[in-house]
Amino acid sequence: MKASKRDFGLDVLRAAAILGVFLAHELNLWIAGVDVLASLGSGVLLFFVLSGFLIGGICFRSLRDDNFSFWNFWRARWWRTLPPYIAAVLLYLAVRPFHPVFPALPAYYALFLQNYLGQPGLGVTWSLCVEEHFYLCLPIVLVVAIYFGGRKVLAPLLPVLFVTPLVLRLATFAIEGKMPEQWYRMTHLSFDYLVAGVWLSYLLVFDRPAFDRLKRPSRWLLPILGVQLLVLPWWSPQSTIFDLVFPTLSALGFSALLCQMYGLRWEPASQAGRLVRSCVVGTALCSYSIYLTHTTFDPLMRVELEPLLHRGLLRSAIVMSVTWAGGVVFYFLIERPTIMTRDRYLRRPRPVADRPVLQPEGIQAESNP
Image 1 (cartoon, rainbow, N blue to C red):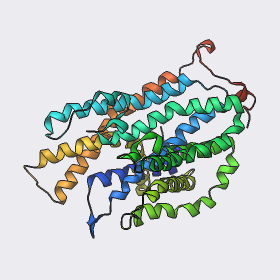
Image 2: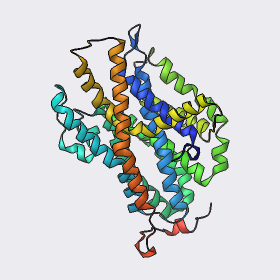
Image 3: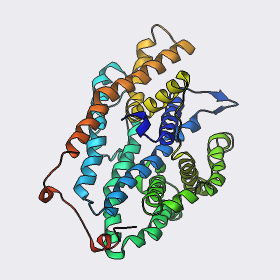
Image 4: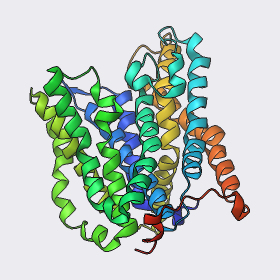
């Protein structure tokens, strides 16, 4: 896809998200006993909001146009995400003999259950589990709701879905007296970021003026991200309730950032500006591949360089460069061909009788916003 046909604002967010996650995992910068780069790992939460916004938009547009199909939705989603995921798992297994501490992967990785049953390796895949569970359920919830209540039911339903993880977190703590280990990786306790993106996509598709009106007031929510990135690393309240409530506020902050960035245009005239733009778009394109592979390439490179360079900036620079390049190569070898074959197949015209379309009465009656 040409850069001019892409939303540059969303590309900036994708690039910022993967760069934050990458730096949080690759570097440790300790100041006064605090790893100040660790908070950049929240880039994965920004990915959630972006994902909900983009995938939700696909779902809502097909519902609006009365051509929604469960199979088409799930097939397009799985065709996009599963081949790179499987390739990343195979890559991990292939290099495992060369790294002394890479543990084996249980069979439940094939079913995206590691965020509940444990992640001995490839820890970054917990976020894919959350997304796969969420997008398996999302169209069912939306279609059933519209079928019985019409499209107007989405206006109150989405806010309810947004606060549902918060309610479940508080209920879990009230009943158990404590939270499960790494609860923030469990789908039912952490899908508020995805719903936030879906909520925005609903407004964009069905009530564009309301979406546009959010741009100005959403600025007041941006300081939440400042607190998350700059304040909490130095001051973390020893309060479980705060830990349970803040993700909901964080989801609002990232949603506000998306509102601010959506539709951003930048067509630089200078060669330097065009180079910067190309780097941003290229980073955005490769973000999924870099995310999937960087925790495999990084430790492997560190082991290989240990006899030559024990520590230092040069060693870190080599490791980070090779790790990043490995993700880019993975994109061109695996992810890009996956996208191209999917798009080529799905764009082929098929007979009307072969197109599985679900048209509940509530959707047909309100097909025009």
